[in-house]
Length: 277
Image (cartoon, rainbow, N blue to C red; front, side, top):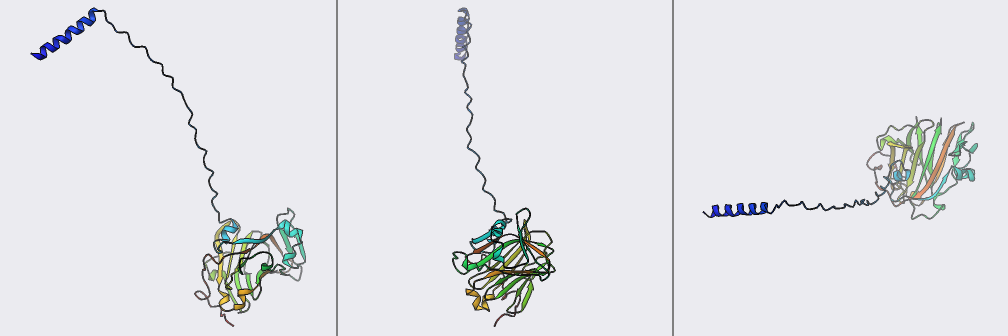
């Protein structure tokens, strides 16, 4: 019964609204202005350059702790002093494009005794010495790079493969005995080489093609264990190669360092150099 009365009351309200002619006007639309604001975005951060093993100093850091360049020369610096830091050879000259320096032998070949004793060129933190250089053989045969001081440690190329020669002990071994490699020098290609001796008389060396570190040659010998005099020596670089040949050098760096990053292999656990006095 209450439901019927409620429905009747609602019906009466509808009739009354209609009797008043009540057609409701629609409410005017409110115009809302939407302000477009451009979001200000933060500038993209400049990405840090990725260290590349093609950087020779990065390569040096794979073997040497904190290598620091003490002295260096590029081609123009070598031209300024007539290549005097590399000793005597028949011809020394700047390349035609000025990007590298040339050492040319005569019929007698080349034996260039370096005039740069490493410890004399700057402030070393200790007695750890290294040299790293970029070179290019032009049909070079009998190529030797010798770290010369209290002893003679030679990076020698036989059949274009790098060998270690330790003169005092009459010892010779290919770099491939220390770490597998089939690196062979090719004419007119550029290479990097590094030769280092730390305060313990421990020797480390690397050779690799410029821009291609996939096939690196490496050797490690703890020579100071047999030759105590190596621990205090002042080293320099001597270069030799065959008759009527040309060796190009683009730059070199003399460095000190704070020990070896990876002690690697040594004669005690790889090959026997017959060392000892």
